[in-house]
Image (cartoon, rainbow, N blue to C red):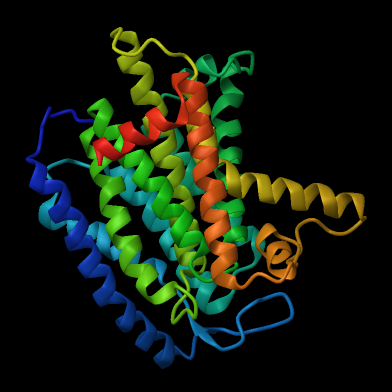
Length: 340
């Protein structure tokens, strides 16, 4: 679990410096990665199922990872556990290999299972999650397996929604910003720092990824970002549970906040899966039936589609907060803005 074990309370400037530093590392790394793509002749090539029209550099996720890691080594006042970096590195390697060589699905699955299992077993009190969500009827030995499956499903759902310039990166930026604000408010400063630093790295990436994109995050990015969102979600939930035990927060509906943050990629993946089964099509094959494809077919351009999906994601987040806090939306927005 990522928590503030040393009880460090950084100065206000520390947060802004970390965000700006990560941004500059990221914005510096992206042209380097584009050049590496040229040397390796490694591009995301257009085909019938893809929206982009030109060969585009990939592996932008390397820049996001490097930004987080260098900022951690240079500025962080907190300790992020070794198992966290180990799990993240496994997915980074898998993503790089997949972007360059194209891994078979079962090899990617092996990497994802390994990284997820390490995180669940070494870093997360999973019984708390099952207890608080009413799923504690699941046998104890099946609980870590269930969570590993959940993590893998989310990583791949996030990968599937990464189909349009600026979409996945922008959604991740929104969600990490919310996780950062929540954890800062709760006093879980290490996780707040991680999320704020990732926000800076994502802003740097989006400079090169907004339409027309010069670089994609690739599987390198979608796997590590999907995993990092799960890390943030699980640790935020667990930390909230512990401060609940202290009587600081009495609400028991925090799972709705987490669900609202993670919902959009899952919702799209489930919808595609069900529709394809009903149409007797293979649900696991690539296609142009995801939500961003459908919105594009209505005549909207890419930027309009991306903004609409950003808005839907924000609506899901606010809905979760409304259920949790039982407050009007205007109050919630005001509180979030004051915390920024």
